[in-house]
Length: 288
Image 1 (cartoon, rainbow, N blue to C red):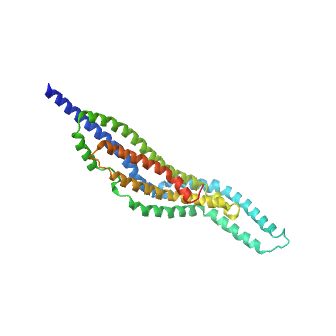
Image 2 (cartoon, rainbow, N blue to C red):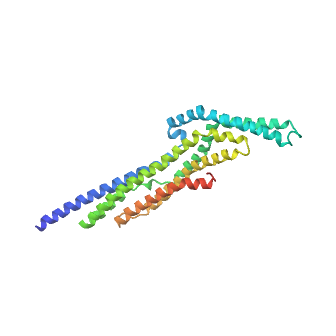
Image 3 (cartoon, rainbow, N blue to C red):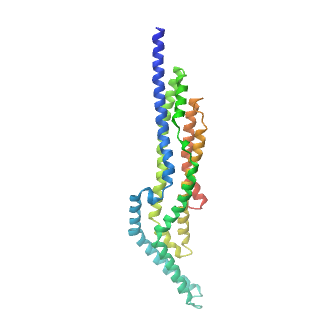
């Protein structure tokens, strides 16, 4: 009878160890894949991330938004000319050079509108060069590798049946949680790029306001917002680098329960910091 109970216990332990390792490997794979793709995704310009979407946004902007920007520029140019004329004591001190000034300002404004996409892409080229240069801080050890899982399996084989059962229930809950966190990471990274596309589609309108001193704050704030979106990728890279250091500091072979809870805690922290990157960059560039 004791031999049968011992065999049954060993069979249950083997089954639980296999189930726990399956949960852990699946849990780590979902997060590792998302974390590993972040550097590649945030290092792309809008044109390279999805050429089809970028072409669609550019065509819509040029065919729909630029005509509206032209109307806004016409109104601003007329308003600016009237202001220039009446500023000199209601034509009492009239000077012809103000027309040349008006022509130059209007020419600059028209040039900005017609080269909107070149300017916006230049902003992202600058920010993405910084992102790509800083991507080297991410080591390949952001992923939880096979050696860590092998060490965990060795520790599991030495545990009792009750401990394995409790660990199985915890690992099952953690697997579901980590899968949800990997979706959150995906939403944050891809949501940033969609926000960039949306901002780029309306670029001609704020660019049309540069011809007037009173309204130019709209265009200036728009440029600050573009730089904030671009350099948000830099902060995302920094977050991944910090996550890599924290994860690799966990000893997976000594205390498995604390280790996997620690990984989940660091992943939750990663999601929280990724959410904060947008707000932080906007505050740095005074964009609102």
